[in-house]
Amino acid sequence: MPETQKETFRDLKKRVLKLLKSSDFEHSIEEIRSLPARQVINPLFSFLYNNDELVRWRAVTAFGVVTAHLADQDMESGRVIMRRLMWNLNDESGGIGWGSPEAMGETLARHEGLANEFASILLSYAREDGNYLEHEALQRGLLWGIGRLCRVRPGLVRDAVPYLILFLQSGDAAVRGLAARVMGLVGSKEARPKLESLTGDEAEIQLYSGNKLLRRKVGDLAKEALKSPPP
Image 1 (cartoon, rainbow, N blue to C red):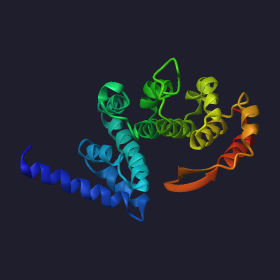
Image 2 (cartoon, one colour; image 1 turned 135 degrees about the vertical axis):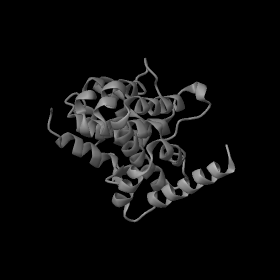
Image 3 (cartoon, rainbow, N blue to C red; image 1 turned 180 degrees about the horizontal axis):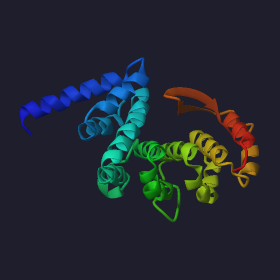
Image 4 (cartoon, helix red, strand yellow; image 1 turned 45 degrees about the vertical axis):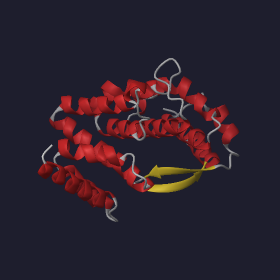
């Protein structure tokens, strides 16, 4: 790649990073959305691995915005990006896939066409007879991504309840809390006994919601889930 192109990529990456760190992130998202999608998606991929946790999460949000916008213009280009995320979660990729389930969930929440095609794949990562993710840190990202999809398109998640319930018994507090949140979003009746058993869980987890990082107790998430009306 010519040096001028490398410099251009570096400049774009710096610009995107500055926008992700902005105190006015709502405005920054619109600016990121206005950038050429095929160029900005690569910096966003790299920021899914950033050391700054808020930057990582905001990159997830921006990733979904940009990919959905691109898919509106060119559906096949949107599919290509989704396949890149899937490849990142494939053992053959040589990587671990940090941020990929979250980026998938965010994108599917924002684009109906991609959701109809790829929701079953996102959910397959929670199935032991599917593409099960054994690493608990990846399970956290997966359950956040499923929750993000469920908030907008719960109908695509309801059939997955029987195997999502199993995550309520995880030894990892974040996995338990995020699974409880999903059960509330989908309005699961089957999960009520296990949710009730979690109401006294005092473990605190970090939750990204509304473009902010929050601290929440697993028990409080379970209580909120129990208050959710059935579908």
